[in-house]
Length: 330
Image (tube, rainbow, N blue to C red):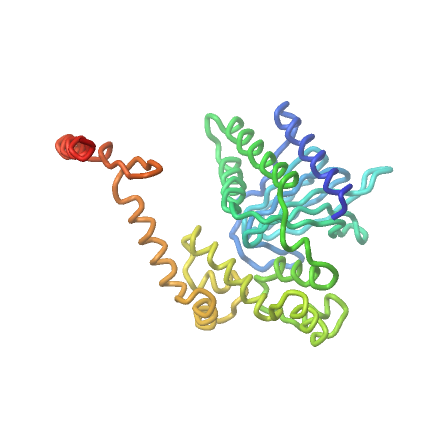
């Protein structure tokens, strides 16, 4: 992405924030449908997707609904929902939108254009390190849930969530960086393909090389020389990182997570996960739950130099703790 594209992206988010504040930006979310199902001419992702229409129109098709996204409208597609996209220019203005994708601790933002008649493709893209990616995903998921169900303060909640999400996008464009952006040429393109397609069980060095118009041997050698990591290892690492996010933030079974992250065999997934994390996925989740339980075992106030349990203790215990603190202080 050029500095000009990044500057334009900041202006786009600034404009969208103003429009939301003035109640002039519409949110569109498809109706509930069974997630993660194969439909002809449709595809899905294991994270939500965010579309901001800038010029022209996008006709979205879903298993249970269709709608047209117009300029000054946002579409949020929940994780796993199959969809197809057909795009159209306006008279005298080409199609263009801004799309946010969520990967492993990485946020992607790209402008899309009409690469072929009625078919969108990436015009310019940038990846940003997002260690707080779960915040973005939670906001997007909550927006979808609130939008889908009537509630007394629905419009207010949708507006607040959307302002927060757009503000976070705007901040990361202004301040964010990413190691991925320092790579150039085919290594950058290979990493993009892996991060976009890690959930595809057929993803391979051969397929990546075919997509980049080079031989697998050449791509593997180039990738290793520039990154000091084998491409096959990189694919596995990205899949394992995605699995960690799922283990931490969802109730999916280990087998479901294996399939969602591109492994066709849960047993093989468990072996690869253990090589990378020194424990099985089941042990990782159990350890995570144990740590969460331990942290929340008792109510407490955390100071920079101590933990204070008195607010969560019965009156007698609190008094004893206070007396003990006085004795220690004297």
